[in-house]
Image (cartoon, rainbow, N blue to C red):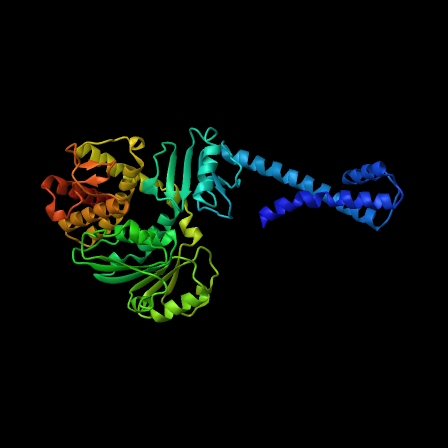
Length: 456
């Protein structure tokens, strides 16, 4: 609606001029005098005594246009002054978005929302436009202005693991954050149940993220058995990850939405996750069919039909006020933990200590490990066996590589991995690893144990 108004306003502003000119001509003025008299109306300065209904309309509408322009100019100047003042703060953040998004910042952060107008004076910049293409184009167009500033770009369509590294930019996965929040709220590792049937319904990118995140976080027992059922009309995920090994008893199944057997799967599911804003019809049907399970449905804004259904088993997820938080976007705590894990690993086994010199893939790998570190800490608090946790960490590590299109292989150069061919000698079961490699997984668990002790 705002974009339409911007297109129509210039046309509407000349209506008084056209109508006024016609009115003055009808009142007997010459063409040139009519044009001049009509133009003068914008400055509330009539230069002709001519009068009729057309001139009267033009007189008032021209004044309205002039008043609107003045108020808009004053508002713009005042807003820019406000932006300039906030940019002077030590913690100033400019958020670029096409929608009415408000991010939950701390009290010391001064946030501005300038739409698509680059306010380079801000200390940090968060870019979340309508599409990944728009966001990346905005960054490229303002790259020189943003040089030396902290830049965060939200991705919704492009896989983070496939992005080129950019030292000046931190990419954050909006759908990944949504999926992470969902699974950590569900917390199946806290429920004491080892067998689960989970249905993920939807053809969106979010559906893939929910499945990926579930595979990387839902690891808590060496005897667990989780069956993941992806119900989607988009076969891309099944093709990309065909034959992917889970490393334990967990299984992956794929279904299309028009398969009648899907409703039998939903009926016997412990958890059903609807990853697209569902219609009232679909939400009611799933909540009724899956009476013995929990139904989670994607709902970025409050006030949807689910809020009014008297069904005890349905819960919303993905609310903007939960997802669009400073912690999720700039991820300061998670990034700091990932940096600590990388440094600890590099000091123990060799490797790059400088976080900024790591490839995008290695950064993402450390972030994934840091994310799972929280789960390990919870399991340690429940007195889980440390060797079992080391095996679970290895399974997560393998899954992360599989999801980023790596596979088992022996590089020709005799090293353990080849990042170009995406092959690694350690993509095998934990039992087949040598003690040196197992020790690396034990080191991750030891790190989580240290963090747990520091907390409690």
